[in-house]
Image 1 (cartoon, rainbow, N blue to C red):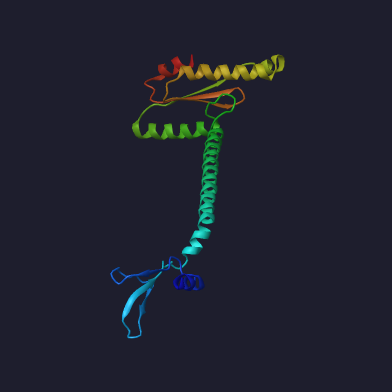
Image 2 (image 1 turned 90 degrees about the vertical axis):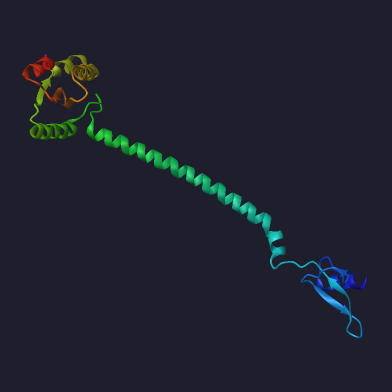
Length: 198
């Protein structure tokens, strides 16, 4: 009863008497008689500093950590989507910068770059390059009489036919309006270019 009173007064959890035969930990004091002989030990459960704080704040800390992990996962997902959208947008902008929107063919800028490269390669390898130019006769008349949708369809069909007439290494481009041009790489002779032009 005395030990329980002392434990309550000093907030000692698990206060108990420890016999001399039991090993004594750090949270114990000797009980001695008047001659100084140790009769027993009074021991208690020693709490580490901050353990009560951890017990009380632990659930809130775990909840906060889970919430932070959820927010971080959400932000990372949004960042990944934004990055993907940006890459897609950049790829589309790059494509649109060098291709005709109506036909999907290379535009004048890409055509000029490919022509420059083809001529440079041909000059080093003594290869032959053919350049063909095509415009649609009476295209303005088609637009004026049948309307712009009909003119656009005529341009699309012309582009498709021109693409079928060339090899993969060659280039057909829409220079603008009803104007098209072709670059034929490694042409053996003039007859090869004439065959494509027909």
